[in-house]
Image 1 (spheres, one colour):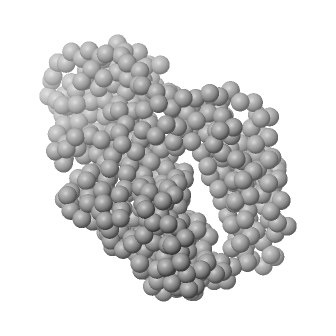
Image 2 (image 1 turned 180 degrees about the vertical axis):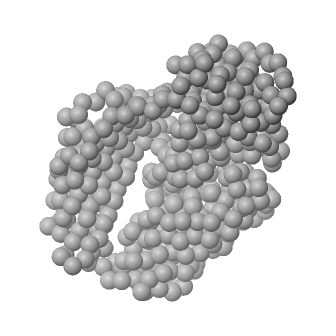
Length: 460
């Protein structure tokens, strides 16, 4: 564990050459993972990550050094390296820290590392059998069960010395369907900031596995999607990846502060349809993207990003807050101690609207129904994106007609936001891993069913 007196001396060394702020991020993480392919164990690991990162500021400059030597001497040595890169003054600092524990809003009942290998294997076996039961076309089922327990401590010269524990459990099922000449896959990846009780209270292992298999089989028998510009209905849950990628990243101070976002300088302006209210909320108990404190020690928040189409807030970390002259929002995140934090999303979603889902479909005319979204990419500076549709259907005359595969959605975030003309009532979230400058972190995406009046659909 990080000793307070050692942290005080390391912070003093960090600001000894003229830095005006410093912080220590200490981490001790234990992880387990079990992977099975067609009911045979491919990989079973238990690992531990231990170390600390020290960051020093001077104005808008920032230097970050990390080490897995967390003795007092190791921390002071890392602090001195950061300090030598930030300035050459001689400054005496007398830093005093006040210890505290973050208020916990995420109760845990069964710590993942306390669960036997046999019990973890039972979950994987059950998922495999359920996926295989869907169809004889299911040729391969890959199941990954992950658990993680992370103890962190954050200290800075403002007197902050705060600790927190973060616990995650996640199941990932990927099913492959084949007819001998073609293959299609489907996946399901539920998780939460919970212990192993996840499978008693929130996640139905068998249903998740069957859903993955059904998507694979449906797409195996689907016809290729034809491209063109058309209305698109995007379902709830992981459909929210569209907002996350196409718009959410452009609202992070990481891009906004340096003018590399299409939404820089647009607070108070209308950037979306009046039907759109979008929220980034780190305070939802036990959700995958939730926190007690962010990775700078700031309590997490519920942040309204867009309200009835008007841009209200950005997601802001400490360094970019300096650049913008704006307060932090509890949005600083990092993969682990080897990364400096920056502003990142937590649980980011379009809020429930008032439109009936049946009416959204029935009034769509000829359109594409994106039931499940896949991965994609975005340029935050321009908002241009490209997303795969994992499971799609053609809508004809207001009715869901037949499945199609190979569809992609291509567009620009700022344009798509203004073209949302329906927002349904049933908001759901889904789990993902988000990669950016500070590494890969757990984030929730979400939305109700939405309809975009026209979007470019790529296909054959």
